[in-house]
Amino acid sequence: MKLRLLFVLLLTCSLSFAQTAVLTETASPESEGVSSTALAQIDEHIKAYIADGKVPGGAFLIAKGGKVIYEKQFGYRTSKQETPYAEDDIYRIASMTKAITCVAVMQLWEQKKIGLNDPVYKYIPAFKNQVVLDEFNSADSSYTTIPVEKAVTVRNLLTHTSGIVYGSFNPGKLMAVYEQFDMNVGFSHDQWSTEEWINRLAKVPLAHQPGAQWSYGLNMDVLGRIVEVASGMPLDQYFQKNIFDKAGMTDSHFYLPKGKFDRLAPVYTKVQGKLITLDELGMAGQASYPMEGPRNIFAGGAGLSATTKDYARFIQKLVDGGGDLLGSAALKEMTTDQKPKVLTNYDPNGGQPNGSFCLGFTLYQDKSSNTSPKSPGTYEWGGYFNTKFFIDPAEEMIFVGMTQIVPFQDNAFWEDMYKLIYASIQSN
Image 1 (tube, rainbow, N blue to C red):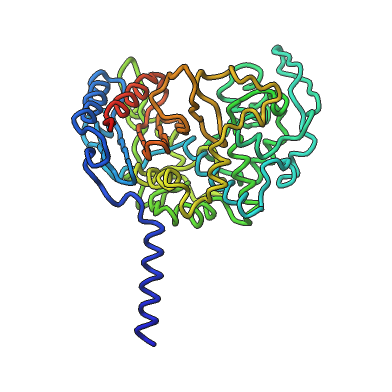
Image 2: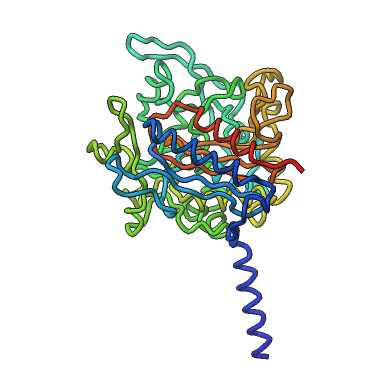
C-alpha cells in the first residue's frame, strides 16, 4: 500500500511538472530545419543598430518545434556600458499583457462564465447607457454626446472596436475629453482599485459608435475587470493560478517583489541623439510602476513585467495548441479573423494589405500582397517599451524580442529581423 501511494504521488508530481515544463530544451538550429549560419546574421543586425545608437540592446529568443534554437542578449543596461543585459532580466512588457488577458477571457468563455457577444454591462453595470462623443468645442473643451446605437460587447473589447481609446495617444479632442475624466492611465495608479478605474472609464464618451471602426485603446483593461467579476478573483491572482503557474512563469508580475527590483531593465530614451536611461536623467519615476506595489489596480492592457523566457513559455503553450491553458475550440475562436463579425461596414480590402485582427492579436492572412515573410495564420503584438512577439503555428515557431526604449519608431529594426529569421529556415 505504501509503495502504491508513493507511486501515485510520484506520478502526480511528474504530471504536474509536465504541465509547466515548456521550453526546457535547447537544440541546434539545424535539428529544427534552420541554418545556424543564416541565423547568425541576426547578431550582426542587432549589433549594427546598437553601434548606430538606435537601440540599447536587449534579449531575443526563437523557439521552433518546442525547443529554443536562439536565445541571446546584447548591449548594456546603462549608457556607460557598465552592466550587460542578462538572461534573467525583467522587462516591462506593457501591451504584451493584452495577450495574457485575452487568454484569461477565453478560459472563462470555455467555462461558460463569459459570453463573447454579451454586453459589457452584464458584468460591469456602469457600462449601461453609454454615450458617444458628438460635437466638440476646442475653445473650452466642452462637448455634446449622442446615445450608443448598440451596447459594447465583450467581442468589441477583444477587437478594439468598442470606441474606447487611449486618450494620451490621440492629441486633440479625444485627449482633452479623457483628461477631463482623469483617464490618461495605462500602467498603474497610486489610489484607485481596478474596479474604481474601470467604473470611471465607463463614464467617458466613446470615440465612435461600437463597431464603426478599429480604435486602439483601454479595452483589455476593461476585460481585466470582467475577468475579476466572472472569476471572483483579483486579476493578479487569476493570472497566477490559471496562467503563470501552468506555464512555469516564475518571473511575471504586475508589481515586482523587492528581491527582483535589481533585475528590472532600465528604460532608455534619446536626448540630443544619444541613448540614455531615465534613471541617469533623474526621470526613473516615469517607468517605476513595477516597483510601486502592492496595489489594488491591475492593468490588463499594459501592467505586467516579465522575463523573455517567461513570455516565451506562455506563447509556446499557444503554438503547441493551447496545452493546459486553452482548449482547441477556444484557441480556434481566438485566432480567427474577427473583423467581419464586429465591423458594421466591413471592407475585406481595407486595412493592412495582408493583415487583419483576431481576438487580441494582429492576424496575418493568405493574401496576394505577401508583404510579410510570416506564414498565414501567424498572430502577434508588441509593447510600448519596444517589445515584440509572434506565434507562427504553421512553422511551430515563436519569437520574443525585448528592449526598453521610448519612443521607438524605427520599425525596420523588427521587420528586417523577421526577414532574417524566415530566410534561415531551410527548405526540405
